[in-house]
Amino acid sequence: MTRTVWEYFSTQNIIFGNGAIHQINDVLNRFKAKNVLVVTDQGLVKAGILDTVLEVIRKGGFHIEVYDQAVPEAPLPSVIEAYEFAKEKNSTDVIIGIGGGSSIDLAKVIALLIKYGGHPRDYFAEGSVPGPIAPLIAIPTTAGTGSEVTQVAVVNDVENNLKVGISDNYLRPAVALLDPSLTVSLPPYVTACSGIDALSHAIESFTAIEYKNLNATGKISFQGSYPLTDALALKAIELIADNLVMAVQQGSNLEARTNMMLGSLLAGMAFSNAGNSLAHALAYPIGGKVKSPHGEVTGLLLPHAMRYNSEVAKEKMEQIRKVFNVGHDEAHPADIVEKMLEDIGLPTRLSQIGIKEEDLEEIAEKSLKIERLMRNNPRVPDKDSLVELLRKAY
Image 1 (cartoon, rainbow, N blue to C red):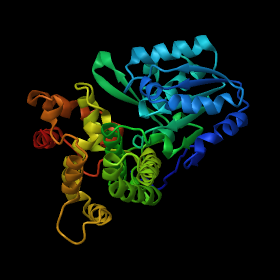
Image 2: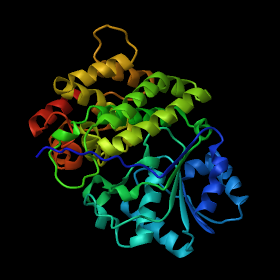
Image 3: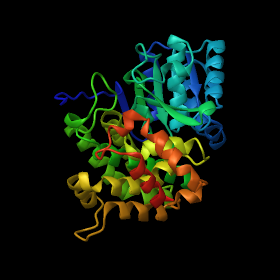
């Protein structure tokens, strides 16, 4: 069935710029908040970033509770622990997620459970969130996941050895507040992993199957590419390509940091409507097997997914190549991404992150079951061709 209509969904309010954090109390007052739950992680506590934000919020006279035990791609037991903390403190007029994608994703799930109860597994099926979640403000401190504007929260179902994305448009934060100055102290490795993840969001949404050719019916979160997402994604690719290496190698460069955060935001706005595809689908089962950060895995897979899709996305690959500022030579954009990975010190082989050759068939099988991503890929995947791709990446 040919789809004839696309829809664009977004966070209600985006506040962007250096010093934007000083607008947080105006936002809280808009929600008539008295009790505020802040969700963050120990990294931000130790870096002093949490104190910087809390100092601003305290000036507004709000009652603040802090849950600072968020961990990367939260295992379900830690999600339940955070939810129980929020219920016990009864401090949820507004929830603020501060940090990388994992902290913001955890804040999304808490906002969901506070409103509707139950267990995170109750919401694994696409579109199963009943309605708007509790008011949520997302303050990213990395330029990577785009979680501040997306409808996805990634959790780790440790019992089934699989990372799962809870996906529903109701999960989008009410407000995304982006202050690039909060990212200046990010270590190079975190900058690299989060930045290459943002690039994979931009490239995968740009090269996603066109919305009218997507094989799906009804309301879906990921609709395939369309003109608005293409414009957002292409600008994101340009910003990230021009600034990622600089942001990694010269972390105090505020212009590079600002451009990276803008690129990540635009990529989030694009992929949360158009959708991700192959690299992300493969990354989920791989992420269940190794400790590597999500961005490191998607970045490693990205050039291989680009080559896999090249024949059915020739025109868009050529547009990406031109945006990469490599003139009119014959370099494939996947080669340029691979060089970028080397320049920012990230692995380019699955064997480097602990994947074994005997894992490849299982990874291919599990990824094929992630329908909301796989149906978005411009080339229809099958197990044999995915195993071949993984062997090339190995």
